[in-house]
Amino acid sequence: MFIKAVATVAIVVSIQTSAFAATLFSDNFNSYTDMTSVKTNWSLETTNITLDPTGGYNGSQAIKFTYSGSLYAPFSYSIKPLNKSEVYTRFKFKVASGAVGGIKFLKLFGVITNGSQYANWTWNFGPVTSNSSYLTTLCYGNGSSATNDTQVCITPPNTVDGGSDTFIGTSAYIAPSTFVPAANTWYEVTTYNRYNTNGNADGEMWLAVNGKKLVWVTNCKNRNDLDVPVIDRISFGDYSNSYAKMTIWFDDVEFADAPFAAVIAPTNLIKTP
Image 1 (cartoon, rainbow, N blue to C red):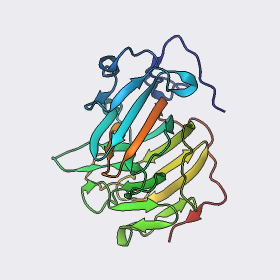
Image 2: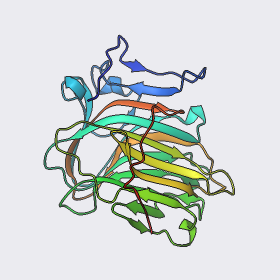
Image 3: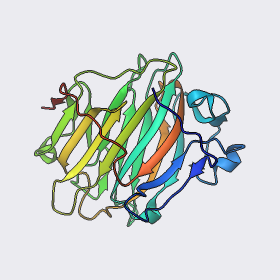
């Protein structure tokens, strides 16, 4: 059971100034009056993203996404000025009944240089078919070129696409089955994404639901040495595929440069081939 803190200030933005101030940004969406006011902190372009006054955690206000087919609909927050090569995210989500198809659940964009040099990560929700939706497929660049996005995709249970030569040396651990969220049930997601340093396979990514990791990738190349190791922005939703018919809510979003709390790596995580 999650307990939602009651605060007099609904949006808290804090830049790290001490060892006790690791939060980069947090938002529970309660202070906004309309989508125009949401744009004071978030970048968005489409009308499928709305404020739900009572649909959030414990009946609070939240951001609601409605998908029906293919759509480009990012809901993004920029952390580029903070110059971070790693970030922790934490947020709550729920889906309505009947959710099918796929969306880019959470996407982290690297800074673009020279028009086409960047390194992105994508945590996907759902397959490319019309029969279900589940967490989570992780797609990222493998460092083989200066354009890094989806050269490697790791999907439960135990499949890797595009992970031949440049994937060697990576340790990828994954839940032995897909995670299908129950309808109208709140879950807490925590992620960690860190770029590799130049010349080294020392990048790391993981995603946990309710404190237990579903995907954990270590010792990897997730950027080319030409790519700036700085995260540009963090985006929810972003794209949906042609099969998507889904209503999803996000609440209590936090970004940090230090761990929120201990996250358990379940004993049943299996190593990918």
